[in-house]
Image 1 (cartoon, rainbow, N blue to C red):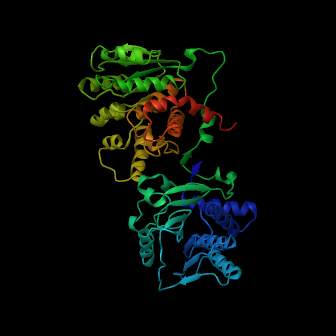
Image 2: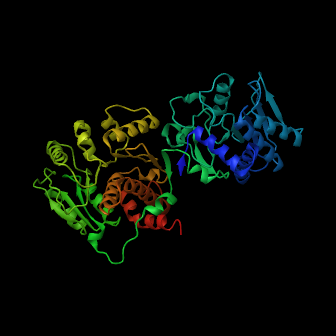
Image 3: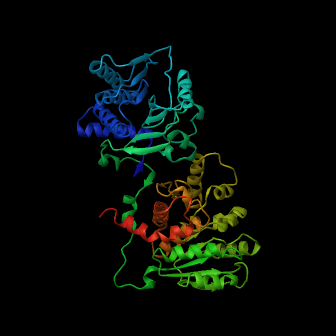
Length: 509
């Protein structure tokens, strides 16, 4: 699913209107009907409802919602803020419709003086002040109104986007003057802003409502941002051939582990083996022999010359992909090992994670030696070490990841609540599955194993990264559904990889 900018969304609206031969009011009525359906299904008709409508089209949505709610038997208190010379044409028409159908409605037209209503925990506030057309922070009396809503205990529903929040990047946001919604009903597509941690207090839970925007037009619209869903990745999974053997599905090499950290190696190896790879070789220090041979008997073990750390590895031609970093450590010997590997030239697809990223951050000149198309998988702290600065927001971090992926011609898997896969061309694939139970030791090692497995099987690096992240998140969701967020461990994620494959593969059947 594409994620469009505010300008693109406006154009898609216009394209839909022209293709269907309708007027913009009809599209607004669809949006209002979709919101009212959700409200009716959640809130009783005796609920105290307070609607705040701005002078633009978001206010027009709010007035249409007010009218439809009254048809459904609600009795909302409506405040229409006429602060500009005139209402937008569609807002004006919905105002007239409301007055014509319900002449005795409780509608206050606010021009200058505003006496705010009493908002309690039993009040449902519908925020229709400003939508995606907003391009600067709120000012004047609207800031006081937003603060008043936020200070109340009312349950807040925002229409399309919380008022005061920019729909794309966050540089222009003024945190104090953004409505804090409990739920945001957005139309047809999510907004980029919804995926940033700093905006969670404002967006709350968000839900997409289908209002029939035309998909034929949408495929032509330009967007470098995508929200990844099952339907997007189902076609990426390759069918397994009847007449095949283990060599058909590739041979991956994992360089991983040190004394006291062999668990990371076990998790990465198990994840690789459970994701369809034919053969997995683990290069690890000699202290890992018994652990690996007993924990992952399916994997081949290649001992390092050292007892406690990895110090020297030769990548021969039998390997199809490389995964390096889980539990590796970042001492002098491991750093020398990484330098030698990169200097000699890695000629197979590779994923760098964990301590491999720590080594890269301490030796930033090594970034220039990463093979084109390599995948790195930093979490927030690892990315900041790589970028050599503290980054104050998810929005800024993603922008820097886009620049870094282009500069080094690599794929960056920026891990988080909504993991973003960034291509060298600036495409961003934002994952929309997974849960906070996956914030647990070893979860990243599992992801490295999955990516290594897919690379070894011949998946293109970008597709491998997108599919791996979605498999990982889906497996985490399945594990959580069976137990709970607090219970699951990295091994529970591995145990659900097979079910994740089935769920995704069967999506379009």
